[in-house]
Structures are given as C-alpha cells and as structure tokens.
Figure 1 (cartoon, helix red, strand yellow):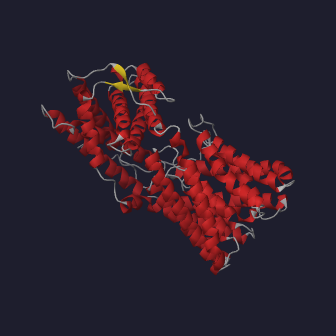
Figure 2 (spheres, rainbow, N blue to C red):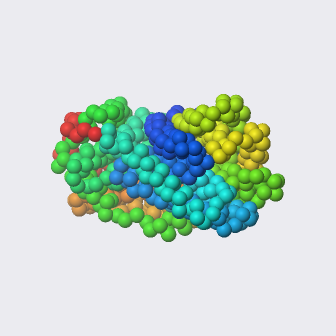
Amino acid sequence: MSSATPTPGPSPVRRLSLAGVLRLRRPSEIWFKPALSSVAAVAPPNLLLLAFGRLDLAMYTMAGSLCALYAHNRPYAARARTLAWVVLGMLGGVAVALVTASLTRDAVVLVTVGALLAAVQKALCDAGRVGPPGNVILTFISSAALFAPQTLAQIPGHLALAAAAGVWAWLVGMAPALVRPHGPERRATAQALNAAAAYAATRGTGDGHASARAAGYAAVQAAWQTLLALPSTGARATTRHALERLVVRAEVALAAPADTDPERLRAWAHALRGGGRIPRIGDAPADGDELLGVDAELAARPAPLWRRLGPLAPIAVRTGLGCALAGYASLALGIGRPYWALVTAAALYQANLTLTWSRAVQRVVGNLAGVLLFAAIAPLAHLAQVLLVLCCLALNFGAEALITRNYWLGSVCVTPMALLVTEFAGYQAPGDLMTERAVDTLVGALVGFLAAVVVTNRRAGNRVEQAVTAADRARERSARLLAEPEPAPGALEAARRSLAAALTELRATADAAAGEWWGRALPQERVVLAEQSGHRTLAEAVRRQAARPDRDTGTRTEDVRP
C-alpha cells in the first residue's frame, strides 16, 4: 500500500462557472426508446379518460404511466425487477401523499411531507442506482398529489388507476424483449468496446488519454454489471458468455493500449448492432480462466442497502431541507402551487455541489424557455380537450428525445407539458400559470441551491480515503497472484476485474469529492499513486495472460442471435 501522505493545504476557492453548462451533447444511442415508451404508456390511459369525460383523473394514471421512463439500459430480466420496484415506489409515494392530503389542507404540513418524501425518494433511487430520470418523476407526482383535493373514500379508486397504468407501463417497458431480447447487453458491450478503442487510439500517452482511460473503465464496468445481471445457465447463458469474452478484450485494450488495434475493437462493436451474429474471440477452453473469474464475481454479494444509504445522507439532507425551504418561500410569496418550487429544488441535487450548480442553471434556463413555449402552444391546446391531450403527448415525446442532449433542452418541453396537465381538470388563465411557474422556478432554484451550499458533505474526503485503501488492497492481491508461477484457475482474472472495479470507483469518488466546495483537502497524491500503481499492475496481468500459448486472438462468429 502506498505510504504517501496527503498534501496539506487550504480548500480551493470555487467559482460559479457557466462554461459548458448549456452545451449540447450527442444524443443518446437509444434516445427514441424512452421517448416512444412514454407516449405508448401515457396515451391509452389519457385517451380513455378523455372518452369517458374524466380527464381530471389523468394525474393518477400518469403516476403509473411515467414509470415506463425507467430502466431502458438494463437487461430485460433486471428491467422487469427494476420497473416493478419503481411502480411500487411510485404507488407508495402517491399513497402517502393522498392520505396526507385527505387528512389536512395545511399548506405548511403538505410542503413538509413533500420534502420528506423527496429526501427518501432521492436516497433510495441513488442507493438502488435506478438511473435516470431518478427521483424527479416520483417527487413530481407525489408532490402534485399532496395538493390535489382528496377524501379517504377516494383514495382506493385513485390508487387503482395508478396501479393499472403502472402495470401497462411495465408491459410497455418489457415489450421490446419480444423483438430483440438481447439488445441491452449487446449495446453495453458495444459501448465498452468503443470506449476501449478510444483509449487505445491514444496509445496510452496521447492527448486526453487520462479522461479516455477513465471513460473506458467506466464503460467496461457498466458492461460487466449488465452481463452479470443475466442468468449464468440456460438458453441465455450462451449469449452472455460470448459477450463476456468481448468485454474481456476491452479490458485487455485498456490495460495495454499500445498493443491494441482500435479499429478491430470498433469492428466488433459494429457487429453487435442490429441482429447480426455475435463476434467470438478465441476458443472456450482458452477463455476458461476469464470466465471462471466472472463466476467468482457472480458469487460476490452486493453491499447491503444500509451501507449504500450511509454515504448518501448529506445529499438526502440537502434534498429535504432545500425542498422544504423552497416550498415555504413559495407559500410566503402567495403562490398557489408551492409544489412547483419544491420539485424544482428536488431536481437540482446531484453527486456534488459543482454539478448541482450546473443543474440549477440548466433548470432555470429550460423552465423559463418552456414558459415561453407554453404561451405559444396554449391557444391551440385550448381549442379542444383532444388537442390538449395530443399537445401533452407531443411534448412528452420531445422531452425524452431532447433531454439526453442537455437537461435544459428537455426542460423546455417538460415545463409546458406540466402546465398543460394542470388544465386537464379545466382551462386556466395562461398568464397566471406562466407567472406562477416562472416565480416558483426562480425561488426553487435559488433556495434549493443555497440549501446545498449550507449542507456540506464532509464525508466526501473520508470516502476518497476508503476508495484509495480499497484500490491499494485490490492491487496488492493482484500483485501476489502475479508473483505465483501458477495461480488458481480464475483467481488472477477475478483479482484483475476487482482491481479494475476498484480503480473505477476511486476515480468516480475522487471526481465527486473534488466537486464539493467545502471540506478538508483531498489526498490527491495518494489518489494519483494508487491509480498509477494500479494501472501498472493491470498491464502486467494482461501481459501474463497474453503470454499464454493457447490464446487464440483470431475472430470468428458465435452462432448466437438476439
């Protein structure tokens, strides 16, 4: 383990930078899937309610329908579980909100309950790594339900509507499995190969090699998490093992970029697109140790929930405090929908304060632009209720299609959609809606960000220390196995993957901690030494594996189709 000590010094002074905050990125590879899923999940319930003349109940069906936005990157077996938990979590939050709304109309109490729900939803979504859109949709629905007039007798019927729509959303989310059952794992493997190719193109020393290496290991780690969620036996195991061998080659490329042909990796990634055969690298016996290493990873149990929740306590406190203060400020200003300010605050909180600041800017810009878009759309939507529903569906599609380019761009569509949804129960004066939404956006962003500044995350430095220690231990384990002439089957591969995972976690933890504005100086020297020594050990492990005489580096195709 490195004996280097942290370099003392004051915490750096942070500046509120706007550079790159609004810059557009390339769209997500599967941007159209959540966009289409959201429309497919929302449209039938809303159109049915329209046909029955009960569009005022759309809030409850949308609670279930919007669950279709989740888990699009997960294999279908894991997606089924995740979507089920999201639907149950949504129903739980809505149930608490409806019961509270039926028992009291005290706005302060309602805001307080909404803030507590937001904190719990944020913590559970982050700990469970649910993925985008995270807690924001859950908080939006539960907060709106708090301010909907309610009686105890109405709650079962309203929850039944949400549950029915949730079941439909689950079916919509799982429907692509009928066409391309191995799509998510093939995409994850292709992304790992492309990321490894980008690093190999730098030869490990060119411009941007450090960021390319970090992105490569993150993509490889994500691919392993995807593949390890698949069954290890049965019909799907053949596909999984074929993809595992490709991810192994991505790992090899990351550890020895100078000896890797990046075009070959890109060709393998391209072959995974669509429904073609999966490239197969080497014979199964030659890869036996690698797959034994995978089996060793499968035996490792994830950390218990309470351990994953612990480090998230500062973020949860920020969320609860910021949402409560934003709601109270909105009430003090006499705004009729304080939950808009509450949800704005809830949407801000990211892994660290720097990212929270960026999200605050994006939220304000997107929401204010969305208010202007609402002014243009409202006259058309007010012509007929069917046009109101169709406008909401179009905005729903646009939000999911654009949000991967940048959060603010998606918010341009989310804001008018949310304003139109409030008119399902009856048309309202557009000027009042626009004014209230703009004020609540500014209040929620300002108060929410100030709460994030006040609640410091002093555990960030401790987490970096723990991550460095874990990386050092993983490196030492790999080094001990490398010193043995014949390590146990699969042991070296399992140790190598554990070391890669530890280094990926170290980089993510260090980046998150560096984005906090207060706290003690981070052990930057230890982080750098741990990363350097860890990557040297990874490269040595690759050379050991490459020296095996039975390794076949040719390319064939595995007769496995999606």
